[in-house]
Image (cartoon, rainbow over all chains, first blue to last red; front, side):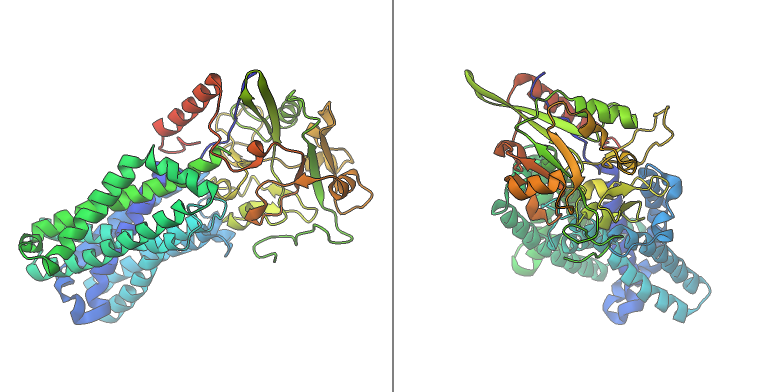
Length: 297
Length: 241
């Protein structure tokens, strides 16, 4: 017999991270697509994106919902969270909001093609609120676990929302660029959205790092994981590639002379894609590093 | 504290109510693993997962070495986070204090595994042939079926050193109530607010603290490395399971 540590292993793997990323991206893509109906002239640059955006969101939803269901080890019981709804579980809320979000997108498209602006606007408003709830509930799903100290932090849901805004803006830019509709006005609006979301991500990540550095022994263990096993993902892909560089590209033209090239639609799209890489890797590191310290216990 | 999200009020210290609890006297544990074997036999627990374990840890350097044993199981918390977090109420709190599982409701989302601070829950594998309960989360039940018959849990029954003691902590005449009242006992991670109901007598601090406790021996290091390689090598669709 030797020193032996039998451990029941970590519960959540890559499929959950992919789901969190894609559902957040889809949600915020729809929020931009619905923008002209919700906010009117302020979101006018995205008017040509309304229907393409809603359809892309629907396609993404059709892809990620089966991913979520088949991640369950009892996939055919996927309706149980609705049948046995429990308000203390964020996952229960998510399982109700997710189909309602899908219905709102359908209502939005239906309103457009049947020329019913009232239906379309109502679907846009409800869909935008439900879109906000998508990254919010995934973050709350982590935050609710006070046993995992890296997750049990009220900034996590907010961080997940801003990461979703970044990746959603990236998808909007990419689709509009491919469709040839990424006008200078749309690129400017997208760059503002990215500046806002990447800027907030910077401060939230900084706050999270400070919390972890001055935190408990478990947080210190998580910090050790972040700086060893996940160092390249967190610092290089997450922070430098995903926050600092897109932050510079998005905010630079407002404050630095000689950065006018970053106003070009192509560069704005690249900015978004870099931010989306950061949005994925930061989520990945937080989800893994949040689970691993406990296995040492 | 409240009973928000729980099916039964916390019963610890409530007169007239039962509150089953366990005391583990670490001075008496010899690391024979009979409790683990008895539990495996009682529930046909598959290979690779455990309802109860005995962590073995060597400390010190030769010739001043010591081997520490740390039996672990579900703490049947009075404020169980796994119960609150379960989206289908598949995990529920029994009025006598057990935290139990409804297998027919469990969807296998693993939210309860994430919520448990004690690493006490696990997923039953798909390829389990003799017992028809597969692909759902499982855990220690304090052998509620045996307790209902007036017996003690299988691990307690088989413990040759009488290291594990089981009973109703609300009954002042029970052995567990007497021990908890008179001996110096600790619970695991009390700061989590879970009010665990497994009490330990004289544990080694290195065994109970949340730890940067990387394994010391070469064999254990190899074991842990294999464990992490396995986890990191297969992250998709339950690869972490």
